[in-house]
Image 1: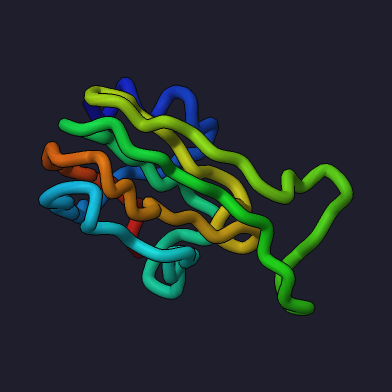
Image 2: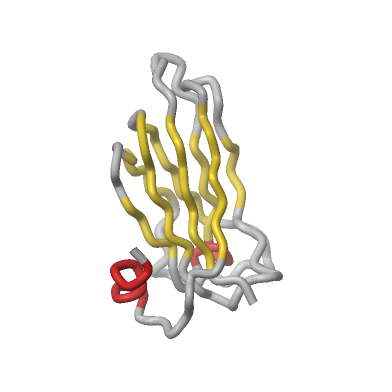
Length: 120
């Protein structure tokens, strides 16, 4: 998977660490946040693999004065992450946007999120 994931990122980085999150059902969620990049290579890709239940994944533009802003930044975007979907958050995504997996009360199936990162 390393070679497959690195090709679309256009960065000469290695995915050196991972994190697994378990969502029992739609009541389990993670609120809006940006990943802490202090121990990561700046602007390196974060690769997320979704397994199990389909869940919403929402990006919202940061509004703080310290967040880099540009007219091209999307204010809000929502994706449906299905079983087996792979997403790459690259570039300045963590600096310009927050992301969340909101509650979905009708979802009763579990979901696993595997994220791979480029640590220093």
